[in-house]
Length: 277
Ligand SMILES: Nc1ncnc2c1ncn2[C@@H]1O[C@H](COP(=O)(O)OP(=O)(O)OP(=O)(O)O)[C@@H](O)[C@H]1O
Image (cartoon, rainbow, N blue to C red; front, side):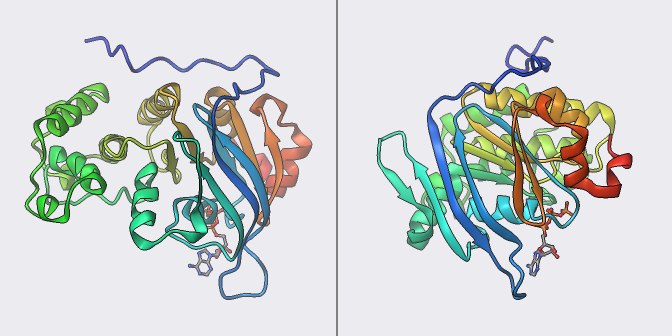
């Protein structure tokens, strides 16, 4: 059956600038130190706009995962500003949120983690419904009481990502690609403005890789800002509207993927550049 919402990837026109729409985030002078003196992220500055599909690239240890976790609030920044431009017109300073506001921010800025964080023994449908936790009272969520419209939405999402036949199957019995699709459905249940995905196609076969990239591109087309860590420059060039290149915790490139040159790739990856695909 045709999937009307799951559009095929569109190859970007070389030199095309990403469509700049409503700004959703501003990152200003952001630093992150873990215990060592050396910052893992150093003076990070960028704005994020609704509907962008942004790849974050760089060699292993460059700070890509740390950046996504800081954006999502699961890791606090050491200094700098992280401002969310809300649809209501006001600005939310992420560093100054109360724990309750932070939970709400994490719903607005949904994240798919590398290990998917599904509940293995629960069925797929319930895992997707758990995405509504941020919108449901603790009492209701404890007893897994979800509304009919929550269920209808979850089913619609599962159908959209072609995984409805597995709705009643335990999450632990799914393949990696299927788990990734369930994780995307779950995060979309939060109605996020921003979707972050930490290496969403790592260890997936080519067919599932395309499925996931198609799905994420389609999410961006729904006017959600999508930010993903990727290791494949080929995928970045095929799918993304913007690429942020990080080397040793600093942004050294932020532009359309078609403008990535061999020189920039060499600065980003050094000798590993030859192994890129
Ligand atoms: N919790 C932590 N405590 C201390 N150091 C950490 C912690 N998490 C990450 N680091 C260090 O921060 C640096 C950046 O790590 P990060 O995981 O952000 O890089 P990455 O670019 O995502 O790498 P990869 O592509 O391998 O996932 C690394 O040197 C890593 O060892």
